[in-house]
Length: 443
Image 1 (cartoon, rainbow, N blue to C red):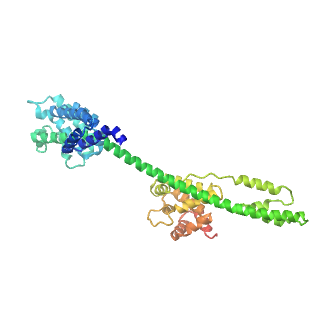
Image 2: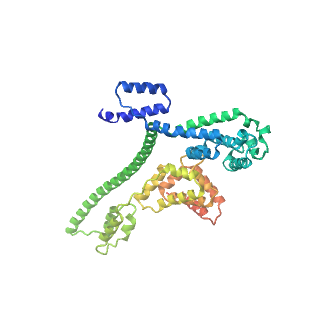
Image 3: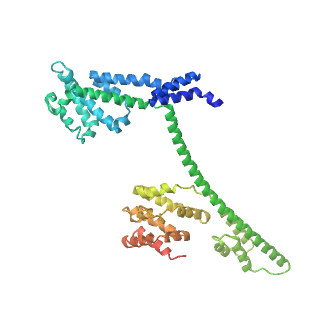
């Protein structure tokens, strides 16, 4: 309650400002009266005073310049107080500005006693012509405004049947009413109440925060799975080492008793000590006739088995969207980067993690029925995009899990066969497509 009391005056001011902005006139009166009865502080909202002190005088100056035919003053104020986004994007503003230029171009003809000053009239007509050739050109295809493009070239528009309406008082009065209404809405809209601003900013902030938290959650889940795999592997290695240690203790005991240990037995122990990726190469590279060879090889292997850094996670939804809708240059860069991420990763756990991420996010849309899928890049008009796509598929096919993923889509096999028949046999695309098809026969 103490926090509310501390900010009570400001909060009540925000409510009052919004009610006034939304034109709840009766509600404002009742709200003000009740605040007064209860002794609540109710400051005058800054937005209200700002609107009273700035918006209304500007509106009055614009209307005065309109009535007096002060063209330069009017458009100087117009450019200063009507935002460029409203002028360029609002059809109402564009149409109104067109008619305002007509008003000032014909003002001397309507309000001069006798013949108007020739130089002043020519200046206004020239100004109108310049407008038609620049900003006004956007409305040249609109039937409503098409006749007025001939206005600067008519010697006496007052007697011309197409322009008689422009010189009637009712036309000028109607244009003034439209201008007044437009200014009231536009200048008022610029004085956005603080309550509305806070609501918009808070909503946008919450949306960005949710997106950020979702991305953090995805990355945390990815790290958790990676650490879990590492833990399981370490646990398995631990149990394996316990078993090997027990056997080695038995072997030492047998040696003490005079029993010889064969090189074949030592080789089988070394095979069990190392991971699947290193078993054959390490075991066969150890020279059991030279003392110390085993310890050196183990040290080298452990150096290679140091922690491999985790690669940063990717936004696969955005990646796939860019691969489908991006330009050819962007597609080629992305395909190349994705292939490098897979082929330059460390063999073993890191490469498995990259491949699993590709498969679980269905990077190539092998499980998708969408007409616009990543696989369709094989039929791209760009030779570079086709080549890089074929290279990425070939990289997938180089790994057992990748071949399983690709083979689940029978359409892909047909697409590769079509490419093989269509592509030039000397091209890199043809070579990679052939390489991918050949790898499908591997287990």
